[in-house]
Length: 142
Length: 309
Image (cartoon, rainbow over all chains, first blue to last red; front, side):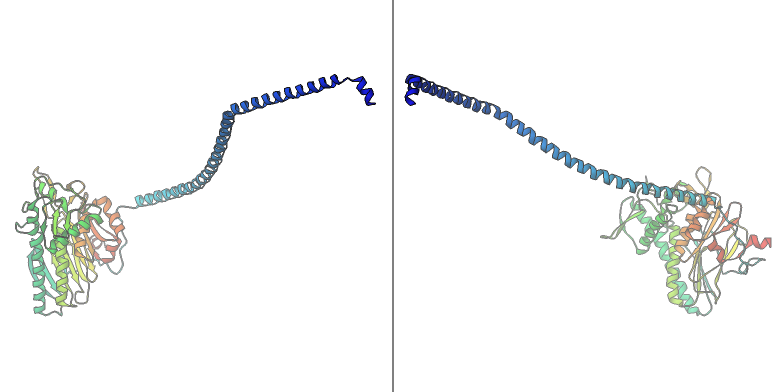
């Protein structure tokens, strides 16, 4: 059978095939080498952009973190403001009550007469002429 | 009862002692009282060229001087009275008194103002000197303090025996009048002989009256003025009032409050006296007598009521 195959495909065909294959392999290797070099150059060219993207990403994460903290502070402030607002409301109510009390006292004090005619005290105030006294209080001029 | 009479601080001075004290004891008490009044006169009189206050005034503003304990006590009391009466009483009205022509040894230095400092005086504890912020009139306070100190000295001498000291109408008492309360007439400021009311004083009391019946004159412009100067205006005050009498435990404070209440005027005196719980009587320009509830408790006779009954 070998003899028949050898008879059907001469040796130079095998040599040509081998040579072609070798040439193809070499060309392939060369192409692969060129591609590898191009990839490396491309990667090197893209490296600053990648770093910039990483920095932007890191910055975004930082901004997000700050926003979270600011949101928490805002929430705390809003809570404190709500509590203070409640206290202020209570204080305003107390001031209003105090104001009405002061107004009532002021009105009552203004309604008092300047002088009051008090009723006589039975048993202590005597009629007739002035009783005997030990001294007289008077203008001293001092 | 035993009596002694004399004069002090330009007013009559009288001591009345209940029965039980011997003549010698009364003489010793009287001598102590006269000595106390003489000491106060020497310290505080603006009618004497050689008094301590006159010498202090002549040093001028800010010039300090070492003064007696009596004068310093009077200055401290006047300062405290200004604060407690919210400025109604103010010894610094001397500038206005002299401007209006009040007699006495000139005290006010050139350019002096009535209120140049929050306090009437400064006391330096290091060299014990007093510096006046403005000229001061210690007449009323001085008489009240003289009564306070004289009563204290007399009480030591006469012991439990009651007595009454009358310094020209300002009165201090100790104990009782032979077992009865001391009975005091309140003068009619119009000059009528009968008092407007009679009151009794509890043990260890005082009573003082501020009135325009005396110490009234005409200013350089011919306008009628009196000695009760309102510190707020620098002019005679007490609109609508003729006289105010105050009773209390201390003669100096009775004097201060009678003056401060007078300067409230007829519209405010009732409210202020009641708010302070003072026993006060006042006569307005119409001659009507009013009083506080505390005064009513001590009143035993009222002329208007006696006439109506």
